[in-house]
Length: 203
Picture 1 (cartoon, rainbow, N blue to C red):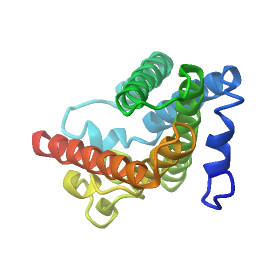
Picture 2: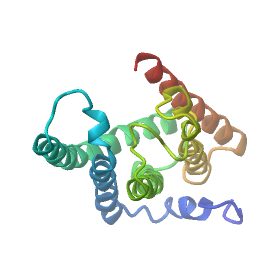
Picture 3: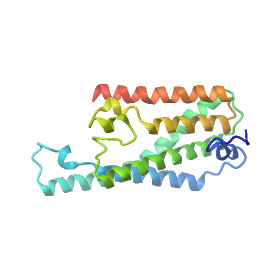
């Protein structure tokens, strides 16, 4: 397993023996908070509140409150998200009778969060710079071809990357077989797309 040439396998394998988590925990919170704040900055408030009769000052106030709210929610949301993700990963590990320690799984959870979070941060920074509002487009999804299409937005490259990182984690840290890790990665992919499509049906 240690000889695998697949990206990130060696990193997640090392977490079994050296499950460092302190710095990664802080970095994960910072990355997720930055994503939330920049996501607010990237929103086109003129389009969002079109027809609401807001003046320029009111729009600026709405933007300011959004930034403050995103900062606060980003910190607490990141901690909650990490906690929930860890519990899910731990439960899967226990159900499949993995011998990985809780500390190793937590460290792997943070690595998963950091990797997927950094990708999401890069994407939202690009959209902010290019003026593509995240309420209209996601440049890593199919809705880049159809503004505001939530169904197409559910088919996102970030979901595929997340599924890959999840599968590698199960394979390298939890010592799942290749077949089992692939099956769980597929389940991850299907579940996330399913939630995206479900959300689109209610929007």
